Amino acid sequence: MTAVPVIRPVAIALGLLLVAAMPAAAQIESREAIALQNQIQELRRDLQGLQQGRGTSGGSSIGAPSPASVAGGGAGQAELLTRLLERVSAIETDLRLLRGRSDEMQNSLRQLQATVEKNATDTDFRLQELESGGRRPAGQQQRPAQGAAPAPAQGQQQAQQQAGLPRPPAAPPAAPANRSQQQIITDAQAAIRRQDWAGAEREANLFLSTYPRDGRLGEAHQVRGEAFFGRRDFAQAALAFDDAQRRLTGNAQQDAQLRLGQSLAGLNERASACEVFARLASQHAGSLKADVRESLTREQQRLRC
Image (cartoon, rainbow, N blue to C red; front, side):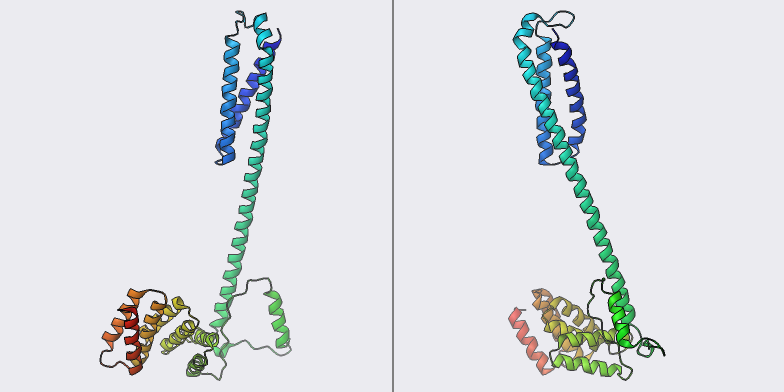
């Protein structure tokens, strides 16, 4: 006769647990959440079956079951309630695990974001250092004052200060006071003949950063393009040769346009390369150098322009 008062509070508690679990599970889009939703649906069906069994068990008008109903269904209802309670406990455990995983992922994302922001800040700082150091005129190079620490000690101190920062690309060397613009260009071209691609790029970058308004900028871009082309970095070479052919004229422009087409061909940009070769032949139809004409014919045949 005491089964009904026990069953009714437990059923109400199960209903409350289901209502509380549904919104939390709906916020998690994963296989575990789908499994939890299926378990919740099964619990709901079991509860509905339990309530329907209580409603049709032949009880009296005041809600108490008859003796036959209690004797026949008490054991089955107790077993069903036990299974329901076990399922609810398992669902609560799974929900706690999912919340823990979600918190761990959020913490990992915050740490990753902080790391990316720190690296970006460090990189920007190093680039600003590089630009400010590379554009300093030759006559304004910093000289140690009398009584200051010797140069090796200063170098060690700077190395210690920059030890924790990411290593930037090799900075161009400072222009000595006794080197003119033409001398820098000459040294860069000599490095190209030696196939010293890194040295040629440094000299060209030095010229471009130190003398940004000089009339020989086209030659410096041409040297940069040759350095990239020698390393088979065709994308950077094409950009450099394009800058060069815009600033050069005459025979030097022919060389830059030829190299631009060859760089585009190296990038498998056949249509663009053929267009550059056609423009070269059209602009310098009556003044093509012999070596340029020979290379141009060979490239057009190879690409079937």
